[in-house]
Every structure is written in C-alpha cells, then in structure tokens.
Length: 307
Image (cartoon, rainbow, N blue to C red; front, side):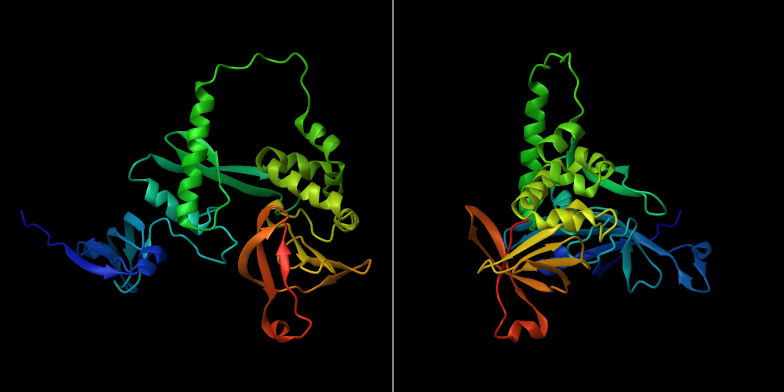
C-alpha cells in the first residue's frame, strides 16, 4: 500500500490569529482525480492555529477547503459583514472567537430558535445563543473577545448555581408575563402587543431599558406609534443625547433616525463614530462624534449613547 504524502502550507482564513501574528497552517492530501473538474480540484485539509500573543491565546482546529490552494475557506463559513451585525448565522464575530477559546476546556455549541415577529416574507427572525456543557445561555453583550469569555463563564456559573437550588413551589395564580410587562411599562404598547410578545422571552431587559428612555422622552412614544420602521429589532434601537442636552436622537435601525430639538421632531441623517468611554449618569457610556465633513464643522458636538 502506498502512503499518501501530506502537504503543509500557510493560509489566512480567520482574522483573530492573523491580527495577533499567529500563523495558520493547513495540512492536506492531494485530492483524487474524481474531485477535479474544469474549474479545478477540490482540496480539503485541517487548519490549525495555536499560540498566545498580547495576552490572548487561540487554538483553532477547523476543516477547510479550497479550489486552487490560494484561498482556503472554512466548511461552516463565517460571513463577516459590519461590526454590529451577526456572523456565523447569528453570532457576533467576537462571540464566535470566544467560543473557540473556550472549546479547549468546555463543551461549547450554539442554539437556534425561529421567532415570529411579523407577517409576510420576513415574518420570522432567528434568535440564537451559546451552549456550555449542555447549559443553554443567551448571547452576552460584549465588545472584546476576553469580555465575551468572561461573561459566558459568569452566566454559565450562575445557571449551574440555579440548578442546585430546590424547585420553588408552584403558584396557584398564573399571570401572563407580557401583560405584566405592559402594565408596568405601557410605553411599549407603541410597538404593538404582538411585537412585545415576540421579543419579551428573549430580550426582556432590553425592552425595559427602551421603555425607561421612552418614559423620559415622551415624544419617542408618538414616533414609534406612527411605525416609521416595520418590526424594529430591539437590539438596534439606540438613543443619543447631545452633551449640552440641546438634542436627543432616536435610531430605530441604521436608516431611520429622529432627533428632537427645541420641541420639534424631524427625521435626520446622523452618522456617528465612537471616540471613548466616560461616566455619565453613574454609568459608563460611549461618547460619539459626527464623522465625515460634519466632523470639521464648528457646530459639531459630542453625543452620549444612553441606550
């Protein structure tokens, strides 16, 4: 029997090890003839990337493929879009990298669930989270990989502690949690009861934060009630306050932004870029400034994101 010689080469597939300066090696065998077509041969191999740089350690072991050995792609390809969007189906990039780091010590995975949020073609939305040692967790809110790792472990330990607690006695009176939520925060009715019912099981804390801001700025209730955006995603609802408090802006998605100034509300095009963090109203908030030509205007001001 003839032993097939394996070939080892360097590839650039994942961004995190590339940024850290950790080489990614692909080890593959020459493909059989039946894997070849007029467009080329299909190469398959195992990608490995292991090492620590700048206090971050990675260990990747992924099955990859290529048509010409110049560009290698993962079998389950992560489609990188913008930083605020999801990748790998619905996982954020930094969260996906965090799962790779945890995979060495924990049995990790991803769970998906389809939730009905409206009608028509886009009536369903995908909700997903992570699984650690069989424990189902929701996606943490984190910006850096190390923060995602820390929050995942904290959520996992908290859920494990809950499992150890004795079960609570069943209540005789059963209440609808959505009705209780709307009773406490009637501002959410502006989005519609069905919208609240669809998101309440997965993003209750985010809905409460949105309601708190809407109660503070009542003009937002009327803007939302007019429904300029169909079925807005709660994680994309943002509120910015000018440092001099002369202007408050509500963003329902990346295209629809409404600002109130001197009692007047109008739709505007607000393009901001992150500058730094600072303490505002006893919480750490992000500070943003306009980008593009507006950044050089004398009327340019700083905005603090409160939601």
